[in-house]
Amino acid sequence: MNFLAFSGSLRNASLNSAVVRTAARLCPPEAALEVYEGIGSLPFFNQDVESTQPPAEVLDFRARLAAADAVLIASPEYAHGTSGVLKNALEWVVGGGELVDKPVAVVTASPSMTGGDRAQAWVKETLEVMGARILPESLPIACAGPKISDGRVTDETTLSELKEVIAAMARAAKARQDA
Ligand SMILES: Cc1cc2nc3c(=O)[nH]c(=O)nc-3n(C[C@H](O)[C@H](O)[C@H](O)COP(=O)(O)O)c2cc1C
Image: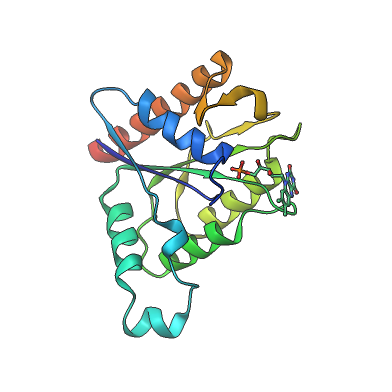
């Protein structure tokens, strides 16, 4: 089973990037979770470019999504929404349909008490219109600062919750394969 995970933050000390790196370490042996780091290299979405000659970075991103059995997206919350870079990445995938019927888990890590729940709602709405199968185990991580150190999730409760997210991805991917 192949999982793809990416963070919507470009910040070096990103809490959300720490979440996807930790998810890769928590992945069970029967699955492999690849962390996609190229989101910041995707050009701004342009429908003219998409319909003529999509850039190699975009084709690569789309191919990785197409090959994944399930996807994990970790999003920061900026001004009550998701990041521009994440929204831009998703726009490149609308036309290709790589996320149609694909199990997708959404995690939002934020220093705030709401855990980035508004960004989470934003991302889910976009994914829903793209036809993704959004997993109910998606997770907001509130007051995330002290739960993450040295680029890794260290809080035991959050680690258990993250393991459950990955288990849900595996269950959904298997159910889709068996269907
Ligand atoms: C421009 C800007 C806007 C932000 N807006 C929000 C917000 O609306 N809600 C929130 O909970 N946090 C907000 N934050 C805090 C970010 O969620 C926080 O910096 C978070 O750690 C960013 O994600 P990252 O650690 O993955 O980079 C904002 C931060 C910045 C820089």
